[in-house]
Figure 1 (cartoon, rainbow, N blue to C red):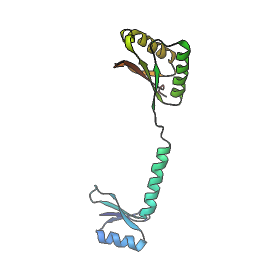
Figure 2 (cartoon, rainbow, N blue to C red):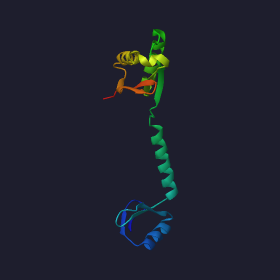
Figure 3 (cartoon, helix red, strand yellow):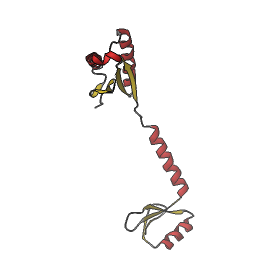
Figure 4 (cartoon, rainbow, N blue to C red):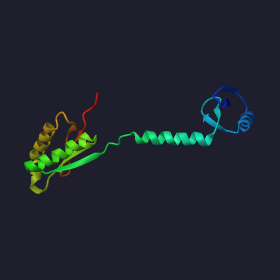
Length: 156
């Protein structure tokens, strides 16, 4: 196996017994770093300290990640102006927070015969969100619901 010393210097290719003896001599552990390499690479180090620092780095990297959620806002095909404006404000707030928004129009009973009303609401929504968000794809119909997903604008 190829051995790297405690201070980072390359010792060279040695047999496992020699590597373990050097580790005991330094009062440290011999850790396999690259098992797939030919010959395998090992390093003399404090394993407890190394694993603690590795976990700490992983934790810090998770802290900095932004998890995007998909928020759903439901509309009806014959929505009133005030209700529409209220829901539009919520969509803008969600988009500014960095989340995606799924705008859903739910049809009931004989409203299913007037799908164009739902398309008009989604078209108005897309027009009102122009510059603040972009629509991902076109309006899709699933059962008695029509939906369109809006995402924050791409940053350049």
